[in-house]
Image (cartoon, rainbow, N blue to C red; front, side, top):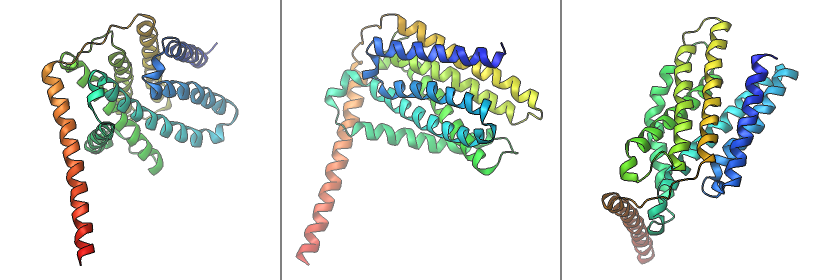
Length: 262
């Protein structure tokens, strides 16, 4: 059996076990997008493997679609992780807070976008270059989210037994290896060099799957309350969001009244 098949079947098995643990432990209710991401990886990966084997001419188009959806779902997972971390104070936050999180991650992505372009291989076509740019931007975001959660774990009252940090750790490791591979690919000149790098990327994904399986199989630690400082900061942020919304509504009302008076 070739290494391609070994990696393929190992990945399928790992994804099935991760999905099973998410369902069995009831974690999918907290992280439904992460569940969707794993389901997509399972079905999309299997589909890509059979397309490459039986329909090589259609593989590149299929790969572009799969990679775009994968990046979109991964972005959703990052938003979901940030929202899930706020569980202890979500009762005090408005539903608009998740839009603030989306906006913050989008702004961070816009800042990262020019940096991600530095990792692109010069020989790529325009559509492949844009897709690679997008994937690298999301990968850098994944690494940064992991670093923020790990560095701020004390303020956020989370540890390595909390699901959010476990998910971020697996994604962060895989994304870091993928970024390293992208830098190497930019200077690779032969198929053998590309192939060698891809093996490490696949191996890092399998390692993340094993890490999630071991972590999710264990009982999760009881979630702690945020520190008073963090609670005050989040509530102040939520309050500022409400004030901004009220101010905008007042401004619109004044404009409407002024038009009616004229």
